[in-house]
Length: 253
Image 1 (cartoon, one colour):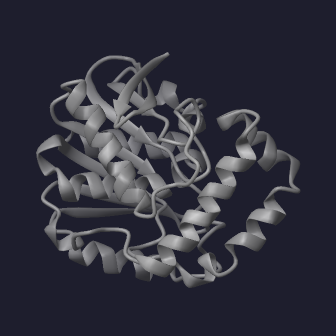
Image 2: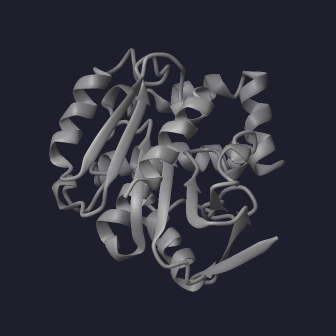
């Protein structure tokens, strides 16, 4: 297993394949293991780099997640890129990882070639989500498949990871609100957003197309791909089509 230092903590990462570096960024409560079933769709075209954010997967644990959660994760990615001298990289972030990817591009455009931001909830937290998250997470803990997924991603202490995530979402919503320190109008790299119109986390609580079109209007060099079918996140539930669309976007000059 490979690790790099972030402060005094160890963060796990893994490289698969060869070619231009492509970092995949996992979503909340998960780890890089969420990409296990789709890695073969990318490794022939890119050097795929996986990371377990601090407090997740094979990385060191934290008693509490940092309140500026997705910004701190972005700084972890910056550290990985810099220490390993990758030069410019492509980023695909899904769900919470999409917020992280955009933060990397906003803060360190010199390290980023292109970004795909998949299945994010917008520029600020959805009140319909944050106001019920404790209750919803407790319900999820009663679902065998969800618990098995969390244990697969983190091991025996999965419940502590999930509880830390729930708590930081509530704190972030209360004290920070914005997912980004800078406005999306300041993005200087090409960005493609993607989402399923039937996303089971968002469809009932927001107008997906309206939210994404609003973000798209702010991004200087932005594109949007809407999948008519599939659940959350579209990167997994539309895996083959997503990979095809992603590779065209990332490889075009």
